[in-house]
Image (cartoon, rainbow, N blue to C red; front, side, top):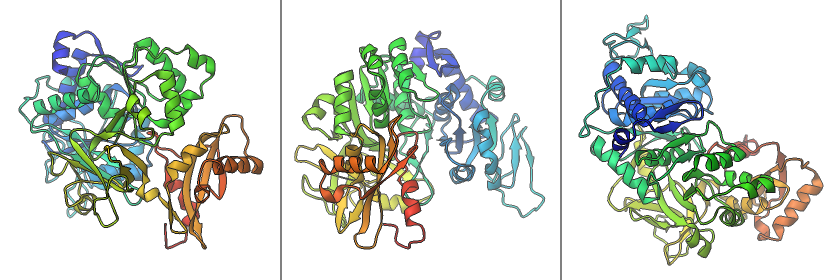
Length: 542
């Protein structure tokens, strides 16, 4: 579809990051030249790896499309990580090339330590698979002849350097029957290093382009109007949903960083039809001044996808009341994509559900021994693709891959919940976040959603801390609304508010007030950072 659009509407704007713009013809040309740069200029072959480290800008999208055309794996790196964390991902992924922007290139300072050869851009391959310098690229070998042959990545900077490299690259399209590339996202676990996720790919580039468009259309991303990107493009959901829509012909508008008032303005000014948001964004939108909310007309919107974190029932009802029945919730993971969906009318009939399984998947719950549970019972949730035996593998981590799969071929990412008799899936929380106090399970998401209803609370995180009598006790960290000051009296008021709405054993024993809760830009609470200070020096971590 994108090739047809570029042929039919070459001069229309396809991509806009509010600083730089690309027409459809320019986008396809630069993506093609990126693919040729990877393959011809830098010597990468199908299944080789490259990486991205940059903000939300047009070059990131161009590179994703170019990697797909070149048949290589591309890893967008979380730009909020520290240098050593970035160096680990560059090394673990085997990236031979990293494309960065000026703002984030300094974070790659640790990356060259992963190899003993360094290269700078030239006109030929960087290195062959044995580390031998190739073509016009310059290489500096370590003095020690016995040094490992693994190469450090070549780094290209978005802007004049990358533009010059693309201008020198061929614009000859790659064959549609050739291999297709893909994105290899790194997903951070609650313990240990992040893991690269390699999802199953189509047999050819043509099939991959068509398949992505079909996947988008199946969830409403049909290319029928502008798509607004609100989240970081290094994360799977904002990136892949937007790319699916783009491949179907939707112009993509990319926000460099999210802002609630700016979001409303862009929807109105650009006639945004599709977007993706996370629950914390809804909360901040609802807390805009009433005058701003009343002035906003949601008429352009046809689909607002949301997921990535639990959403409170009251928050979602308020958004539906404001924006209408355009909200569509999904549940899934980087590993398997979208597994369930629910539109607003069905959600209102089944409040709290994350939907039913999409046609490609079956969803079921198991007990701790892996036995399938009856409808309505809570356990570890598994998703089984009805056609693919293994929808994904973890890069260079066979044992972790095996641990993720059930004997039936279904996989889990550790979510806990239940599937009712009608097939509606309800989440409880992540298994790793569950608090066990006095032998009773407490799911933090439920408690967080209650705390967030208090007018003084802007955000809340709930976690378990050591308790010599109960094993763990429930602890809350609270970020207060603007202009509200923390005090023992306010803490007591919030806890009394919670006791009116929760079973007593679920109510936090105490509250810490924080200036800002540690959240991933996608909205996920970084529970480890809240828990860690309380568990230091203890052998048992839960």
